[in-house]
Length: 255
Length: 255
DNA sequence: CGGAAGGTTGAGCCCCATCAATTATTGTGG
DNA sequence: CCACAATAATTGATGGGGCTCAACCTTCCG
Image 1: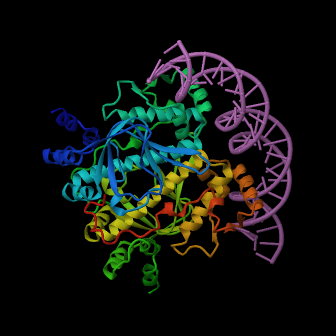
Image 2: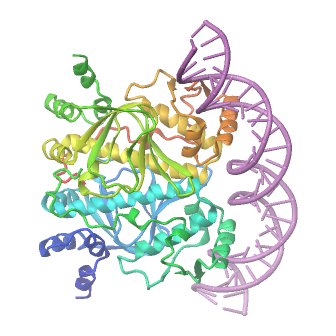
Image 3: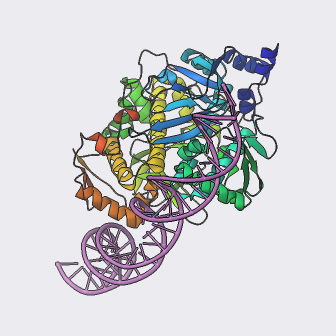
């Protein structure tokens, strides 16, 4: 029963629900995808760079990161994976992963065989389109990070990231009004922002002084949620939170 | 006749040819996609940020960039688009673009209606898979750039970029052994590398001193092509230049 | 309660930015 | 083909944002 409830409220459903209104059978198709789950402890790699991809993964609970390391130990976090996020959907293409994915917190995940993905796309193309849209959105956040790392100051980067996470946590019901739990150390923030941990500390201090954010005990509060300009010119539209064109016949091969 | 020849040797064919061996009808399907072309002058936007995507684009000739600008004029180039590259393949999802695409040199391009893409995927799923693979590859270069901007020094970034372009120009026949034409100004390099033009000049100077590259009159020579370590730990595999699993039945909805 | 992990603060330095001047290259019209 | 202007590249001097090293403090957790 409890399991039943959890599935009915799966963050993936909430997420895809922004793009398509789902019929009962469609919801069931998703439910089948996530019928089995697995607990994974914190700080565990789900995918290691160089590995051949063999299955897709859906995150049910917890935070994970996509990252790469250089041989001398430098690490860069590409982005954060939140509940409802999927990755390696293209596992059926059998490519080697160019990066690793690791858990930050204890997570519960669904491992999905490649065939289940291709079946889903075949039978429920509207769901496929919604998943594509969500993949596009993730790609947009990659570009946003490139912009940040290349052209924004430390403060702009940090403010932008904290704001982005706040926005992303909304649709999956993982935020509490204007604040949310941030289960990250400053070392991890540093590796995402392209800074050193020391400088992250100073930077966050300045954001606090400027009255942009509150951050203590792993809890972030966005103090000026309407003032998107202040957070590094945050453009909410870039997250493509608009519904897909429902009238469109589903693409055959996903495009 | 000349047109015929050009189509038979389209860089898109060369590019996709790395992933699948194409049958004659498949080649014809591609040829139909690129039957009409259009000349676009240099420094022209093909897509502007915020615009609604309505068509896909295939680049036949010339260089273009994917970029974003901040309101104060700072610009970041996400990546470079080379002959054979496609973009906005997902135009049928009707999303607003979060970035602009502009030509660097005079280009010839093919504008492809969204329906032609979905048709192609429906009828020639193996081609669809190959196109997916190439889209994945582009995403990998985005992550590579994130790693560069976040964790590599100016010299590493520059060496890595010049090496990457050399590798990408190979399969489309746009390089000449160990050197190639680089139609970029240092301002553009700076906007891609997250540096200032002045520092790009100094950085390139140091790479020359170190004997890694030759660069004069818009011509680059990679002086130690085997020494991938030297170019910022360049990992060729990350470009996914391995063939797809041909036995795989084509994914219905592309995944 | 004590140790470990995480966060803050200070001092000094270096990489890269900025400003500015000079040289080289490209492009254009006569 | 040359003169000239416009664009691009180089070089120098100076300054600042972020890095490094190190000490100290705070929080967490067994």
